[in-house]
Length: 279
Image (tube, rainbow, N blue to C red; front, side, top):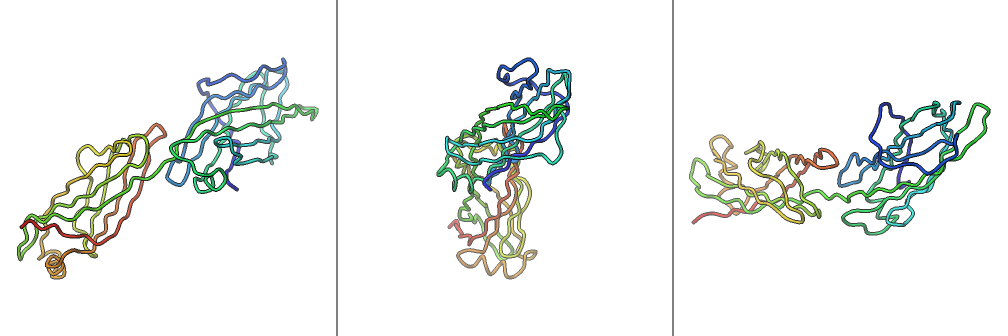
């Protein structure tokens, strides 16, 4: 199944976003109150439509089922009918707030819709069915739209290790990781925490200092200088530094501040690290 929609009951109020369609005096009005993107990652997201159900009559109603069709970029993504196991009460003379979330997997999206880059438009159209105390059914149509991003994780390139000084006892080196942002918008990076391994030995860890934000479709290279003590790291490390390179692993987390909330992106890159020795 390419996506999932389920109704979630809210308590409390939300700021008005859009008005519902004109209705008869006792018809339930379905109105969009907000749109929220949740759980954004490079694998997908959830686009949640926050909806107000207003019952202007003096009698209670219950939402018993709904049907909907989801299209993304005008291509069908999902088409379902759902009957609720437990009817959702909609009391009279007030508004009941619910969430109608659409869960989107990028892999399934591309399989159903085709190539999608940057952002996409989601349209959801359907009907909600309510019953009164006499089990008489009333249909309330709805149609909402919302854009969502196609998010790509930053790419990481490890540049050759600059060796400023190499002695019998250790090395003065500079590690250069390069972070590339493939997205068409800036990534406001709050923190990058990392651990660096040469072979099976951790040689450096901590946060990367300075401005870490990545320009849209741009890159940033960081310089991380440190000293290696061969008496501490062992004879094998000394031997490795007599060669042209060493096995390297660079792992950690990137924390991004975005309009969709705080994103936590984990990375783990292993490769052979070449040496750039200063003559």
